[in-house]
Amino acid sequence: MADKPDKPAESYPSNPWPLLLVAAVLSAGTVYAALGHWKRGALLIAGSLCIGAALRLVLPRTTAGLLVIRRRWIDVTVMAGIGLALAAVALIVPPS
Image 1 (cartoon, rainbow, N blue to C red):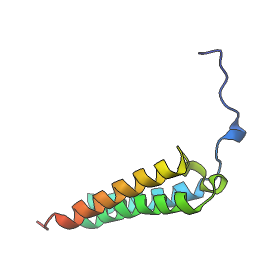
Image 2: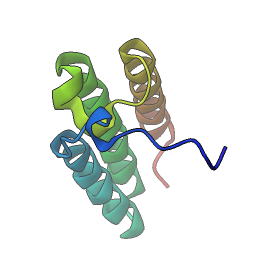
Image 3: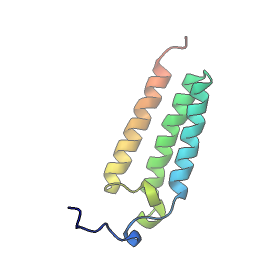
């Protein structure tokens, strides 16, 4: 397998902005959770996943950039499902 060359760089999506937006919201949620506001942090992390799912749903493949991993419906279903499940858990768990 070492003789098989990698794909050329042109075949990879090159737009980093949708992923950077999702990563920025995810980082804000992580900071909130680390500072003790775990419910707000969990909701921000869930929101970042839902933002990623929405961007993957509406943006074309070339513009979605690094959010493109698999087929569109798989990417959207997984990100939205995990985001909604995390939001549900954050809202159901009573405050301490």
